[in-house]
Length: 251
Picture 1 (cartoon, rainbow, N blue to C red):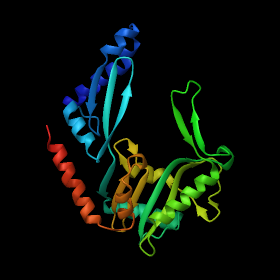
Picture 2 (picture 1 turned 135 degrees about the vertical axis):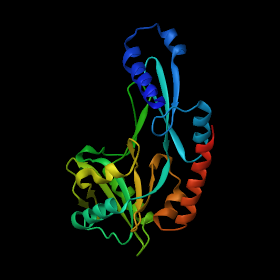
Picture 3 (picture 1 turned 90 degrees about the horizontal axis):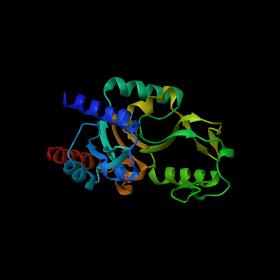
Picture 4 (picture 1 turned 120 degrees about the vertical axis):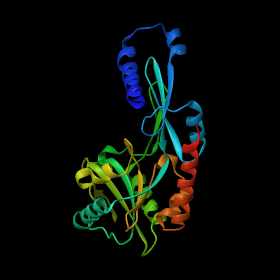
């Protein structure tokens, strides 16, 4: 009931209140602020901020004319595929992608693989017309170099392999200068490895179905390096769940 009430109030605020016109000076001070956990359940500001200070969570901010929502999401996550999902995924990997599922699989995932002509000629920072925001553009040559470096850094001979997956392909070759990209058939990776609604960028899957997910923007490079190479897996996993249990106990 509490969850349904929260959803009702949230939808009412987003859809109804946004249609009411108010002076700008009013809008600056009259916005309601809500805080939610990963699954959009209402939590206190104190709970939100304590979790945010840990390295287990980041926070996403949503805003309209009358409401500000701060929603937590996992920076990284440990889990285990059940036997049915594991068998289906590994069968798809073996038959469609020709992947060796007896090794640790390190997957980097992107929604869209751009064709070569869509990349800028040079890497650099691109600002908006009013200079209020910017994005980092990367050339195709640097994109390929980064992929090669990533593969080299995270691969461990005879133990783990690195794979670059995509959901959509705008026309990029699947192999280019010895680098290779893999299709996520049926979107199964995109659906399995998510933090409620958002998919993780980096996924590490062990042959027994244990997995680790991380967002590259929140990444702990040392942690990812250990996990990708099969080092201190149990220690990192136990530390994660101990921290998570403690944070979830805070009221």
